[in-house]
Image 1 (tube, rainbow, N blue to C red):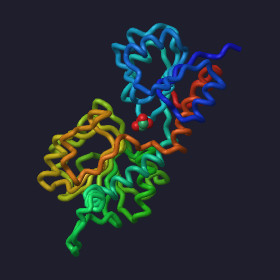
Image 2 (cartoon, rainbow, N blue to C red):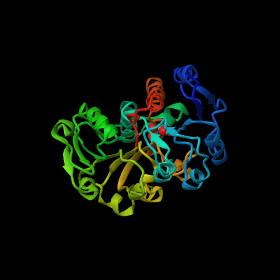
Image 3 (cartoon, rainbow, N blue to C red):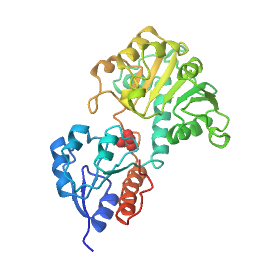
Image 4 (cartoon, rainbow, N blue to C red):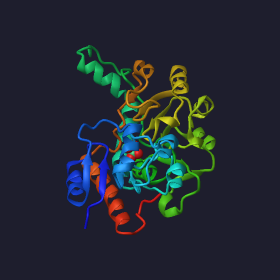
Length: 319
Ligand code: DGY
C-alpha cells in the first residue's frame, strides 16, 4: 500500500522520527525552523498530513489558502491556540492534540518555578555564580514557605490535577477554579471556587493551567492581581496570553506579588525584555514538556492519532 505523505515541521525526538520514517512517506524539517504561512500553504498541496508544533500558526487566512489534499493536522502539543479550529473544520481537516502525556513534565516544571520563585533562585544563583556572595545573616534571602500554604489552581484539567498531586506532597491546601466542579475522585479534597475572583482571595500561591482562548486573554490583569493576598507568588506554565505582563510588573513593583515563575510569555520566542530586570521572576523558555520521556510520548501520541485516522477511525484526540 502506498504510504501517506507526512510533513513534520520541526525536529521531533529521534524515536518519533524513526517511527514516522517507517510508517509514512515523510519529509522532516531537520533545519528546525518554524514553518511559515507559505510553508504551510505549500504543504497542504503536497501532503496528506502535517505534524506541527505550537510554533506553526494555522490562522484563518492561511487555512483559506489550503489545497484540498491535506486531511489531518496532528499536533505535537496539547495547546491548540495556534490553530483556528473553526477554519480547519470548515475545510474538513481533522485536528488532534497530545493530551495526558505531558501533564507530569509540565507539573514538574510548575513546581520548579513555584519553589524557585518563592526562594530567590535567580538572585541566589547569580550571587554565588558571580563570586559576590560575601556575607550571610539570618535576614539574608528570606523567602516564602511553600509547605502548608494555600495554593490556587486556575484550570483543573489534566495538568492542573497533576500539579495538585505534586503540591499535596508539600501539604498545600489546594483550591481551584474550573469551568465545572470536579467529581470527588478527581478533586481529591481540593476546594472548588465558582469564580476566579473568589479563588484569588485565598491564593498565596497561584498557578495557571487553563488554555489560551479569547475568554482567558489577560486573565490576570490589574484588577485580578489586586485581589491576591499581599505577597502572593504566581506561576504560569500554560500560555503567555493569560497574563497581562505590564500588570504583573506593576504588581511586583507594589509588592502585591512577591515573585513569579514564568515558562510562557506574550511574545515567544524571545520573551519580554522588561521582565529581565526583576530578580524575583524566575523565567524559563517554554520548556514545560521538554523531557526525553515526554517528547517521545508526545511524538508517539501524534503518530497514534495519524495511524487511527488513516485506518479509517476517529483519532482518540480529535478536537
Ligand atoms: C503544549 O503541548 O501545548 C506545550 O506548550 C508545548 O507545545
